[in-house]
Image (cartoon, rainbow, N blue to C red; front, side):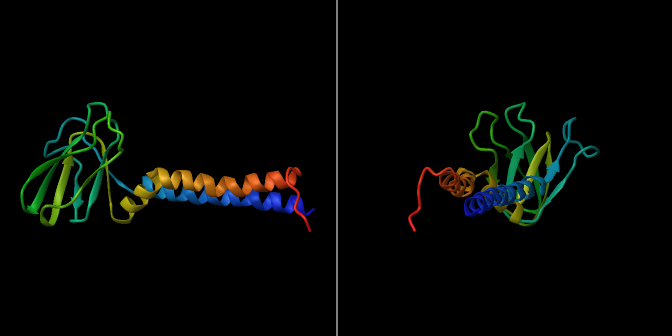
Length: 158
């Protein structure tokens, strides 16, 4: 009876850890701003993102032309173009620090995702290999130990 209880607790632990990682990953990936223009950026068709001066991360959603390019027009400061990582890059986002004071308007020629603040922090955590493998280990080790004990491969002395 005790063995079954330990096994069920281990299975419950796995479900809890996997659900927690899924919530973190879902919140990090779904809670972002998508900016899109499929016909090139013009005054009439460009989606805009208001950059409030925090660090942002830019991800190219389609990655078909190598990278996505966005134009940043600050309220006060130098106008610049920023780019997502190349499609052959090992990183999924490119991070940018503000070079201006105040806010800026970002318009892009392709579909991109922009993350900042807590969403960026959660995205960095969810996409880091350490967190991914750590979550798998935290979930799997108690389950493996419970299965070993349940099937009697290791005896616990009393």
